[in-house]
Image 1: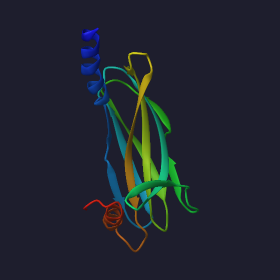
Image 2 (image 1 turned 30 degrees about the vertical axis):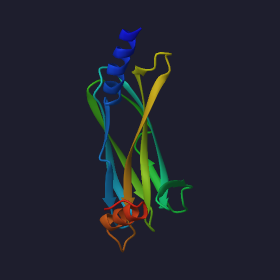
Image 3 (image 1 turned 45 degrees about the vertical axis):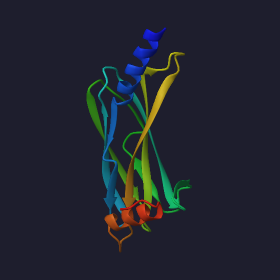
Image 4 (image 1 turned 180 degrees about the vertical axis):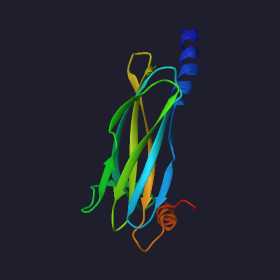
Length: 154
């Protein structure tokens, strides 16, 4: 029994480190973002990925998901894919929001090798944030304002 627990403790951290998403954040100006997100599978098993996007604001130091505002458009090149072992995929994304916005592209990952002792598959969610500034502001200024609103030193 102790051996099984030790093996599980050693396997789970390596399984959780088997995926990466990058870049973590990107800055864009002029109300439009044409960017990409790279997802890497460092495991020895295929990785199923489901992509979604949502708009968020930071209020009182907390990130809050909001209903997508009128005029905001997020287009993902793909919403689901399977990444072979030891490979990466680059996914293109376009975000249009003339007034400026913050959008997170979220990747939910399911891997056959990531299971609990009871057989439940572990899901890992990683995100990449697009800070899109309006026409009169730079993307870096937008990110700085969001970090300050979140009580994080920029």
